[in-house]
Image (tube, rainbow, N blue to C red; front, side):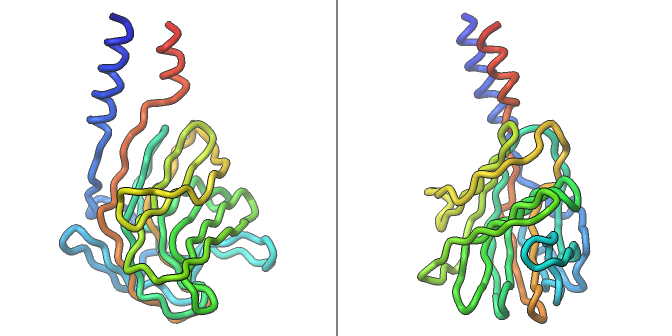
Length: 215
């Protein structure tokens, strides 16, 4: 009986946790000059000469690119479909999880030296950068972030069915986090980016689940 109740609780929690986000109710950080929401899509012109980066390798800190978000606590799965008219070196779009200016993760597509890359930047006081070079140019990419305990797993997909892990990174737990999507054009004059099917699914706290199994 105990196992049945526990299983029912998990199924009900997962069902209730599926939440299609209302784009109109989200918040801008560094609002771009041009953007619109239409047909459940957000399209923006990414601000020229903007980015998120802290210190490492280049020696500068910038925190001025457009970021559209809601704030969540606990553990969750977030995903979004991104499309960009990338033009200049380092033009990028992606999902972003941000605690503050010293702790954030951004992951998505980045245009570097004429090639499209799946890119992840993890920042804890200083930033790092990892890329997966794409041999073909996809029309769009799905990016998914799963926050569990003290880590975030980042996945990519070309069809919203088969997801491939691209990064597992430490991320402070038990702390509210801003979750949304961003675009940056650090070396260019901006470009058009579109975000659609953004969703956040609540995941029951893993430590609590472990406790319930034992009690």
